[in-house]
Length: 176
Image (tube, rainbow, N blue to C red; front, side, top):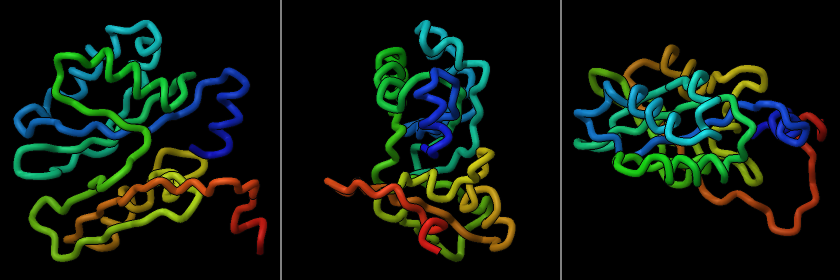
C-alpha cells in the first residue's frame, strides 16, 4: 500500500486495495467477476466496494488453475478484506490475499513465453506496490513491460519484507 493509501485509511477515506485471487478453476475464469460480485454482495462491509471491482489480470498458474489480480476502493484494511473475503466466499474455490506471498503470475504471453521474468521486491516494500504507479493502478511489470518485450511471462515473488525494529521512513528519493 502506498503512503497516500495509508493516509487515506487513517482519515476514513476510501483507498485502493489490490488483492490476489488464487485457485480459480480454468473452466471458471469467465465467471470470476460475476462470482466475486456475488461474494461481495454477501457481506455489508464488502457490498459497497463491489461497484469498484476491477480485474487487472487473469493468468494461468498451472494447467488447472488461474490467478487474478483485482483492485477495489474500500475503507477496509488489507487484513480485514482478506478475512471478510474468506468468510463471504464460502462455497467458492477461491483463495484471497492482499499479502502476495509466493509466486504471483502477472502476465503470460498468449502464444508461448520465451523468457520468464521474476520480479523480487526490496526490503520493507509490498510486492505489487513496488512496481505500481503512485497515482493509478498501473503496474509497470504487468501493464507496460509486456508491450516492450513480447513473448514473456512475468512472475512476482512476494515474501515477508518487514525490517523488525526499523524506524526508517526514507525512500530512494529522500536519499538522493
